Image (cartoon, rainbow, N blue to C red; front, side, top):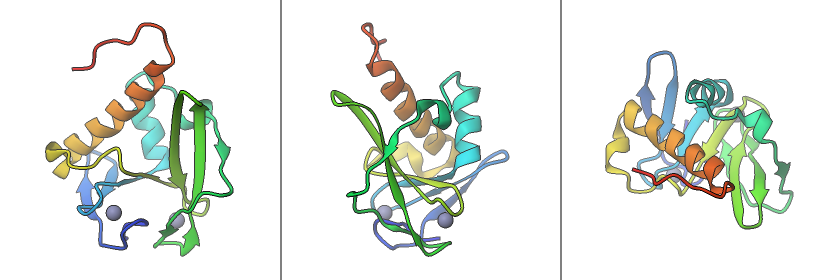
Length: 135
Ligand SMILES: [Zn+2]
Ligand SMILES: [Zn+2]
């Protein structure tokens, strides 16, 4: 598939039993929702359903190039600690953008997976009073 944001072909990163797609242009990551949830739970992080969030009807999102439907922007967190991601309601794909720009170790599956875990760890720990120093 192509990047919903840049419309360039995404690089396929094969993992154990999961596949990530990464845009070499913007650094955005595309991951299946069930794969993402498995990843989060494996790292003792809340799954996407328990994170919740609401759809931002005004957001300008790209299109899922597999399903040819517009992505939906889901916003969660509070004002001081917002998080958002785009999702395809047809195939359940999740597009995480921008956060992942320029990570040099993210051209392989392990690096990309680490970025995703880091992103959600950072986000889910921000609301707490004591934030563990991030290595
Ligand atoms: Zn892109
Ligand atoms: Zn789709």
